[in-house]
Image (tube, rainbow, N blue to C red):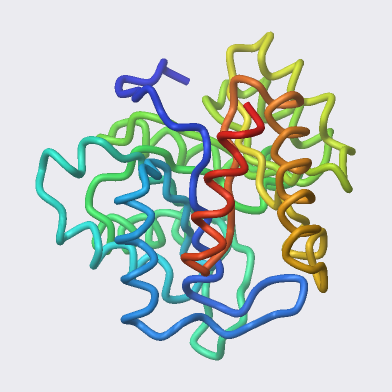
Length: 259
């Protein structure tokens, strides 16, 4: 793929927005009310978060992020980095389906552009080996490269798919990585050699790493989690998935302290 045409000097802790639009987490909770979701996005922006990661499969997430983006000035919007995906789709009944057909991918992208406006990073969602080898996905990626989207990625969950995505020349690979699940850690070094950056999601194992811990123990666990990721993925990004403004403040502080 062509080299990226827009790259910010990004603060390497971003906000994953799955919980903003659908039930998610170690103990699934419903998404917050509209006003609460908006306050979280406003707080994240004020706290210096630049990367916002969403997807059609995240329910209300793209629409809520898009409404927030419309409140920003052109200059403010240029300071942040919006990542979304295509390949997993939201159903009206609250379930999702995976469809990497050309028609489904392009229809999904059209809707994402309608909701979000400019997209800085488009990722293949549920990028399995089968999906990445699919001819219709290749056609869709060729079509998208003619659009004004500067960077491309793949969200993977296994080594084989990650290696294939690197061979295909994606700018970013998103994958689960945390101190409790280090299975994909070898991809980081391979990606760096290929000039590809890693987005590590689930840094706290969807909340399982801090579940039921008292405040002081939680603080130490979060610090340890980010220290591991800053060492394991030094040139990449980490996504925190919290919907709590209090926890976001704590996570940013811990991430900075782990440097």
